[in-house]
Figure 1: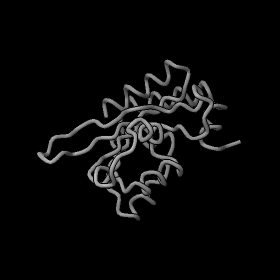
Figure 2: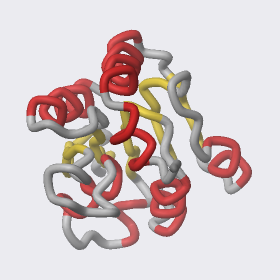
Figure 3: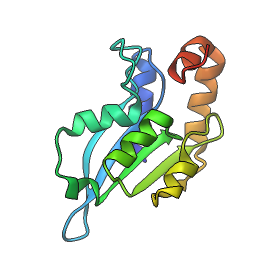
Length: 147
């Protein structure tokens, strides 16, 4: 989760939404390997789809299906419907979420499809998002598709 939090802070410093993500795979010997880490870049790149999770998968590049099936995606915030769909599309079996109090995404749908969902209720993740939402409500609403 540390890499995802660092990415969230990086996004905030860039003037973006503080949501970070990291993709980690378990290798044959049981060691964990960081495949990619990125952050929400909708504002920075004027992109409708570069949320934290999708930007992380783009950063990882093309991977074999077998790699995704042994991976965990870490995200500082509960994944929205788009990111939930992306997780399901690539059969990522485990999602670790920093917090889901400022926004509750598709967690129940992930669980219903057999994905293990772990919520850490991380104070730092909550603080980053709550402050951003308070200071930039228009950008936040745009990010989640609200008027």
